[in-house]
Image 1 (cartoon, one colour):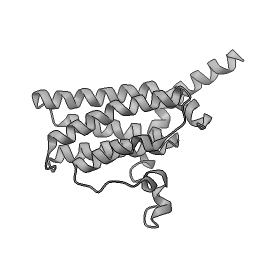
Image 2 (tube, helix red, strand yellow):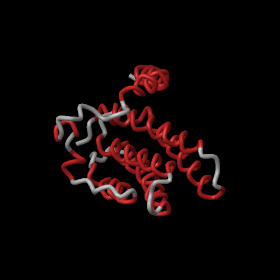
Image 3 (cartoon, rainbow, N blue to C red):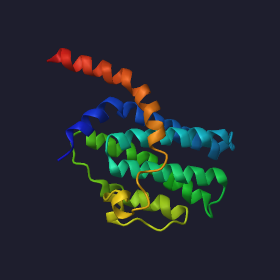
Length: 181
């Protein structure tokens, strides 16, 4: 069964998440076609960080991990440190397509099944030469598997900024919901 709090929160922010992912895809397409401005990578990395923070706040572990891997791959593409950038760009494009589809399924009431995202996560990791994740590593928080890592790095500082951006919409939808009752 889907956590109704996560799905309820997802309904309020999913449009912005999908818009951010489309924007990232547009920037990556622009870079692939014309070479583009390298600052687009910074914008893509920042947008993926915001999406990751929102998904983390909604406690959607699979989508959060997929977004984290997309963000790391963008950083590696920017640094031009990948052995096969074409393969990496393809894996990133597929992940950018799969994540909104997965969120649509959650919003429609399907159960959260993060293992559906494991192949995409491992494709992203493989394209940068990292070892694939096991099912346990995807499902179990890193803090349980490792004493050295308390929380996901880079998520907490951006949560305040994201909350400030999302709060007005949250209040608007809350008022609408209360008026319907």
